[in-house]
Length: 61
Image (tube, rainbow, N blue to C red; front, side, top):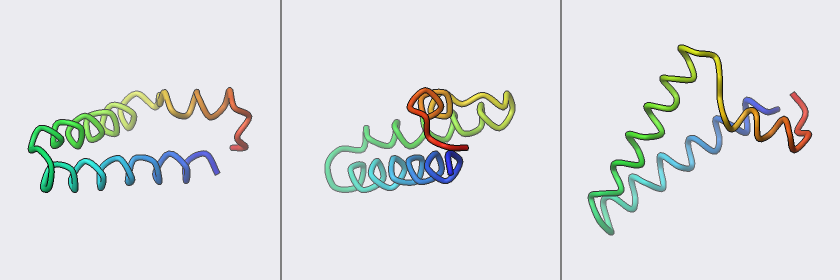
């Protein structure tokens, strides 16, 4: 359940930053890059801050 929530939030952040980057200000594309870097870091270190936050909120694994 937690992994589905993490993927959903990452997808929402990416899509939102793309829309904002196209229609509001291109600087929003930095957010897309930030999410991508965090996903890459998480895949290499097997550590995810959002996973820790969801664990503290007692979201089932």
